[in-house]
Image (cartoon, rainbow, N blue to C red; front, side, top):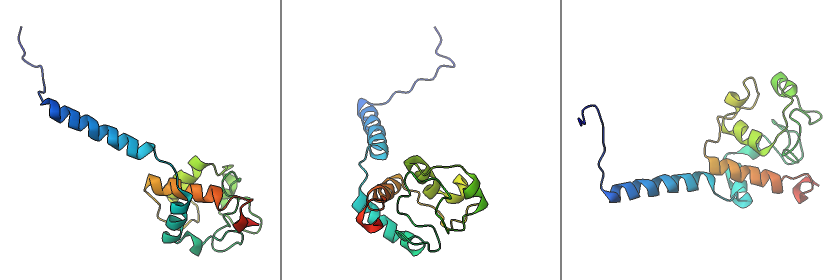
Length: 142
């Protein structure tokens, strides 16, 4: 039988084990982490989110109290872009994550002047901060 045209890869067992370990570690570190609200507060501050968003008041952006679960474009008195008002979107954790990863990619036409938060862990932590420290019934929002 001819092996012509067949391709076989021969690697030492240690290389295969190492590659498997790296692939597993990448999977675990990327998807299986606990969100940390305290770290999210730091990321929120480092990214200067509080320069445009307050807990309860309209600034450059709408307030963040109760944002998780809120209908997009629903804060009275804030001049939302037409695209946000017409979106019908509810700010779920998934939608917030996609939006803050790249606002203009997620919703072209938004007024959100932020390049994006690309690190998945940072986004998860900021969302945890919003869910807890900016929940409608949190001390900062009363």
